[in-house]
Amino acid sequence: MFDKRFRDRISVRKQEGLYRNPLVIEKREGRFVTIKGRRVLSFASNDYLGLGASKALAARVGKHFNAFASAAASASSSRLVAGNYDTICRAEKTFAEYFGYEDALFFPSGYQANLAILSTLFETGDTLLFDKHVHASSVKGMALSAATLKGYRHNSLAHLEKRLNAVPLGNRAVVTESLFSMDGDLLPVKALGQLKETHGFYSVVDEAHAFGVLGDKGRGIAHGVADIALGTFGKALGLFGAFVLLPQGVKEYMVNFASPFIYTTALPPAHALAAVDALELVEQGDHARKTLGQVSVAMHEALTRQGFEVFGDAHILSVMMGDEERAVRVSRELLLRGILAFPARFPTVPLGKAILRLGMTALHREADIQTLVNALKEVA
Ligand SMILES: Cc1ncc(COP(=O)(O)O)c(C=O)c1O
Image 1: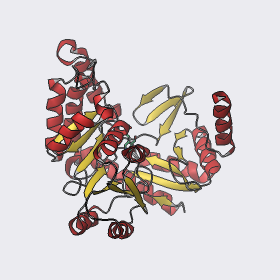
Image 2: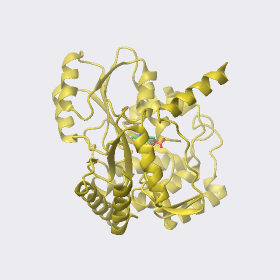
Image 3: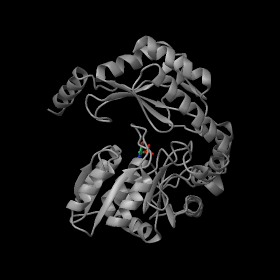
């Protein structure tokens, strides 16, 4: 019964070129990973500042996880039971202060955080206006909220305004991202702020790919426009888990009503200490941010010069492939030439708009750009 359904669906996925079978990474050293014993150059991570591969951060994380008595490697229960460690509470305050928000709330993952925010804060009678390219976790969170959902064209504030004019004033919120995870383009944040002033709405901005990299000392670009912002530890901060920046009253509400927060084991106290260390490294990361900016611009220009259709305003670049099978084939051929680049396909991106997603990092060098461009010219 169920088995047949599962088999049939997998078989359709294969026919459509949408089947997933993630590669096994045996080892990572800086911008290189080892796959089937071969060292390949990776453009497939979100480790924008290189902290995920940094010995300095690893040493500090190790130290905290080893300090058994004070930090503990597991919270061993939900925050609402016996997991509300002082180290976590203090780390949340540090994050709120750094990013300029009233308070913060940590989550085991960004997926869970988006699910929690959107499904808890919004309900029947509310309207959520959302950019059609927001992350799957936001889509799932909105779907669980029972609010009325109105999508607007990707990054089109003109379309958002049209939508705003058509929905009643009152309980309405806009859900968007500051740097889009697949398209790599930036939210026109100033224009969104102006729209917020004229039309009055609540705003939830996912800064998962911007925090740590964009804005002064990596503080993101949506401060002052976002009522609630989401960041993850698993990208530029080189760790795992997520933080939500929010007003104190909303934190209180989440702690009391957010099922994905209440009924889950808290991140380890040792993680909270490591997160504060990661933030310290982010603050000191001007050099890495500058390098990342330079290699990203250089890659964008080099690909464009070779005639590729490239999108992306910052460190996430997408090279248009269109056909799903072509994207997979190109990625496979690149791997044979020692390069790892992720073919993003439906449902991650719209059907027929498959891309090769390049995640640039501060670890990349000028020579890597030429390596990628030459190989891509050969295979695409
Ligand atoms: C925009 C965006 N939000 C949220 C997430 C989820 O974060 P996490 O990986 O911590 O679950 C991701 C990707 O992973 C993302 O790209």
